[in-house]
Image (tube, rainbow, N blue to C red):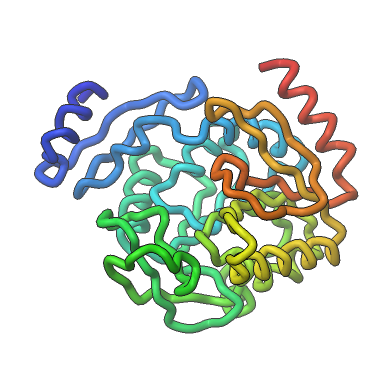
Length: 291
C-alpha cells in the first residue's frame, strides 16, 4: 500500500479498521512501517530530520550501546537503524500502546541487537502516573510529572511501572553506554539521577530534550533545569544546543546555561563529556562538510 492511499485512509479516519504495513525510506534505507489500531502513520514521514545528522556526528565517538529513554512509537529507533545496524539498542517505554506498536515495528523489520523494556525510568521504583493531554493513545506529549503542564487539561491518565535502574541491573547490563537519549516530557531530572553513576563510569554522549520554561514565573521548570545543569557540571560535561532551520541541523552551539526562553525549536541538546569534546568537534565538522 502506498503513502497516498495511507493519507486518504487517515483523512477519513479509516485506520482503526485496517492493519497493514507500508514501505518507506529513511536515509536511503528501506523499512516496513506497520499501521495498526490507528497507530503508526506518523512514522511514514521522517520527523525531526536534524536527528539524522546528529546521529552521524555522535556515532563515530562510540558505536556500542544506545539507550533510548522514551521510545514512543520508535521514531528514534528507525533513524538509528538507518544510520547504523551494528549498535546495540535498548529502549525503555512505559506506555503499553507504544510498547505494542514498537514491538511490531521491530518484528516487521527483523531488527537485530534490539531490546524493548516496557517500563519507565525514574529515581524511584514505584507505580507512577502518565498524564495525557491529547486523545491519542500514543500521545508523545504525555508526562509522568503532574506539575509539568499546569496550563493544560489532563484528558486521561494511566498507571505505569517506574524503575530506578539499580533495580533493573540484575536483568539489564547498564555498563558501556555509548549514547543515552532522553525524551521524557519533563521527567529528565529523575532519569538523569537514576543513570548518574553509569554516566560517570561510561561517559556517554547524551541527547536530551528540555522543554522551555517560557518565563521567569515558571519556577518549577527553571529550578529543575538548573538542577540538571548542576548535575552535568559535576560530571564534567558541556552543553551544545541543536540549532535548526526548516527542521534541519545548521549548528551545534556551545552554551553555558539553558536560560529562560520560549522557543520550541531550541530545546534539544547534545551533552558531551569534556574528554570527548575534541573528537566531537572533528566529527561535527566532517559531517557538515560531506552532507
